Amino acid sequence: MRKARNTSNQVATPQQQTCVVYIRVSSKEQQQEGFSLDAQLKFLNDYARSKWMQVVHTYMDVESAKAAGRTEFGHLVEFLRQQQLLPSAAPRCQTVLVEKTDRFYRNVQDLVTVRNLGVEVHLAKEGVIMAPDARSHEKFVHGLNVLLAERMVDNLAEETKKGMLEKAQQGIWPSQAPIGFLNVEGSNRKRIIIQDPEQAPLVRRLFEMYGDGIYSLKDACKMAADIGLRHRRSRNRLTKSALHDLLNNPIYYGDFFWKGVLYNGCHEPIISKELFDMVQVALNKRSSCPTGRQKHDFLFQGMLTCGHCGCAVTADMKKGKYVYYRCTGNKGTCPGKSGKYSKEEVLDQQFADSLNRLQLDEEVVDWISRVMNESTDAEQKQKECSITELEKSRKRLEDRLERMYLDKLDGVLGDDEYKRLSNKFRSELTDIKFSMERLKGEKQAQPITGARIIELSQKAASLYSEQVLPEKRKLLINVYSNSTLAGGMIIPNFKQPFDMIAITNDEYQQKKATSCAESDLFEIWRPRDDSNVRPTP
Image (cartoon, helix red, strand yellow):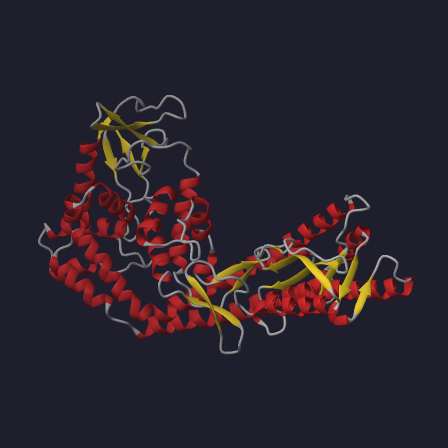
């Protein structure tokens, strides 16, 4: 916002009439020839000289989308009101010079405000002077011009909203690009968003770190600052609130909300839907935890439940260095005596021992690697059938959304019901989209994913023993889910597919000890009728 220019130090001669100048532009108009502040100022100063007027103040307003309202217009009104309070014998300034009607008034309220001041308004480009004693016909025409100016402003706002809605319906994000994206002009001259080559990798990294489930929002804020992820313009650090909004924004996996409705975006996503869902689980888990600040980071905090009563297991530090775990007893007296403590180092060793169950013999690893790289015709046909069915479901949902929109326009469907159903069906469309992408890329991706799982299984025990506390915790969260503690003993609960690997490897080792034929041993690892690797009990 540019402030008023005060030229009151120029003393007007008795023959001169004093006046003030008001000019206004929007940020966009400032760039267009003929609308700039300098162009308006030169024109009005020339007009003042031609009318033998002395300019005592110049008020300038630059409007933008971020700064609504006209600060300098308010200052102008206040100045003219102060002039009314001067003694009748004192010289007063009661003349305003403006370029034209729509530069001065935005609505009828502005017109009423100016008329109540009893001032003379010169609309220089229109060749009109509106004085307090103007004829009724002149006031009527002037009022119509103000109404036209107001209609133009309202119509521009309506067309802008309409255009933004149309872009959203086409899958184009219609507003300022969020962190990680940039606004650019697309091939059809529409503004679109693309990945920011500098910030997009940082956003992806932040999602990956938070998806591990071991960090709080406060930790994530520090991580974001450490890796250089900040607000694009201000360069300020991300607050917890801003970070939560970022991690909860579906635009990063390809969808976006606009006016409460979910749309399927056509921009290139920064992360996968699976990673986004992992982060939502981590966010929900954090929000459901009791409030309060934890003084220490404990290795197994939040990972164990009591095997006797199902309550959470909490950790305490004794003498500043010894960590013990016990049942919280929140459901009353625990059958396993909630006051009994288990040492962290003992539990640490039990987890390390359980990870050994995942370590496979080299011949098993070689055999599994060969099997994973085989692709049968039956499997490929099944994938093609699944893709065909998904395509039918996608077309059915798109047709349904189109019919719903027409029903909304016809008044058959209310706005709230339309938003509810639209969000539901668009969410289903997103699931279908990612399911199809996963199936189409599954042939190439499966061996890579399987190889990584086998590699982690082989190295889990050795990695665990070598890592520091945060890395140990990260590994445990990737491999286990909600293990239990009873009588000082850990009952590990492996996540899929590590649970199948552990159980099947137990059976393999038992049969191998009885010297079975190698072919029989490998049969243990083949999928059963339910497509699980693990054997039927």
